[in-house]
Image (tube, rainbow, N blue to C red; front, side, top):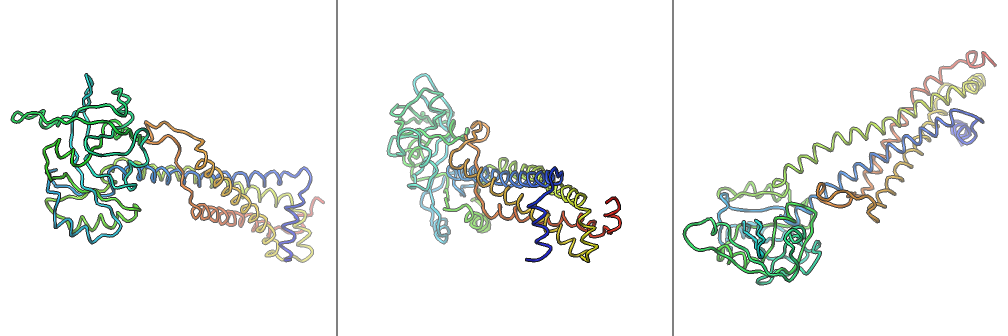
Length: 400
């Protein structure tokens, strides 16, 4: 084994009794590990939060919506749109109607937004959030949010009526009203959806709003959100007036802008925690060098070159950084796994759109941060080792 490596490991394995440098080294390892773990966990929470929000919203609104510029209904059969959308692969196209309505049950009435559509099997977000009843949009059936049901004391099987808001406000024709039976309750965690959105079949919505063979727009769903970006840009370029294209991030741009704004301050704060751990390594190495100053003098008098002495202490700093980095990565991955598996930490759903802290397990990011911590530790060890290599034997052994 290399001489510098042998001496470095002997220093680490056999510290002097009552050595303060040993405590400093342990604190440096703990500080670096905590900083790296905090940074990895923070990144995983940010990514998990954005992914969860994005998937929930896309599940309801679709990744892309194509509508008339003036929200004017248009025919279900549209050869130009169908031809363009037929060139894309991997998307599900869902025609929909979206209109305001008045929901009434007995003396209770509430304004809602009706989404009339055909549920495309398991690809639609409603599939995974039905908490009571079934996902059934047959003729005369309706799905409402659990919060809205609790507010109006509604249950699966209850009958209610929907009134077309435009017909209520109009002065010409009579009111358009249609009875429905509740077949399912959903709970998404998104307050604006759970309290104000109801779902019916496309045919029932067309009858209620007098839109025979017409729709409000087309909803596009993709297996992966990454596919939506390129297709969204292409649709924007190829579709002009009277069509407009909106992505799920455009519709909720305030929320996604807030997430992006919060990302950098949070990363900066937790990055500084990791930086403090690196600074602790400089302090620990300085303590070790001061404590080993007598040995440095002996090594120099025996003919050790300054380069060899630098290597000894650089190896010690690298080992301390490696232990701290590996410990931080392992602790972070363990805590992330525990949260994914057992959902230990809950949060208020009304505020954050979910009832548990979301995390995303990303091994590549964890390894990258771990290697960055190791590299920073090596760089932090260079300055103390340079000082150690300049110590003269006479100065080191003066008081011996």
